[in-house]
Image 1: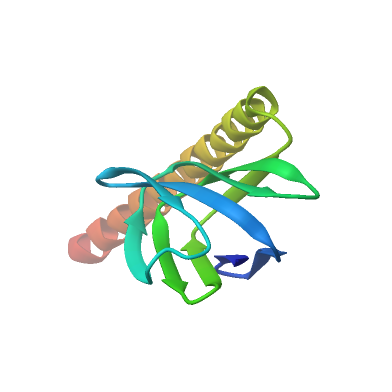
Image 2: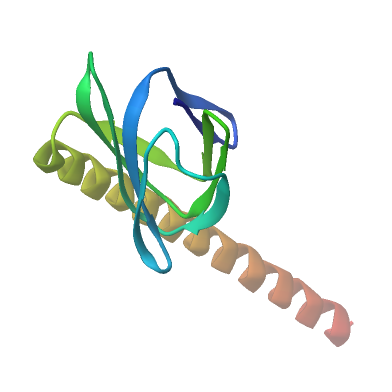
Length: 129
């Protein structure tokens, strides 16, 4: 099989000769082998893993998205993905990514609150005049 993992802004992975693939769906884990029937499914956040004869098992943490299998091609479209050599390393990378994202969101919320407060005070000044 050929596996392509697509992010909104780039192709994260394009791998040929994938022997098997396991993803997480709302209904549980889904294993895909080369001769499986074509399908489309939603993906939940979790660890996707695939295996090739050369690379062995590769683990990728993915956000929610969609998987489409059509013939020998499997397309996975997700918002975010992080690769790791083993599960422990991947867990650390995901925790760092979430911490960074949390801090960015907190900063954005603080800036937005300041903008809203300034806007409200200016509107109040206009009503006084």
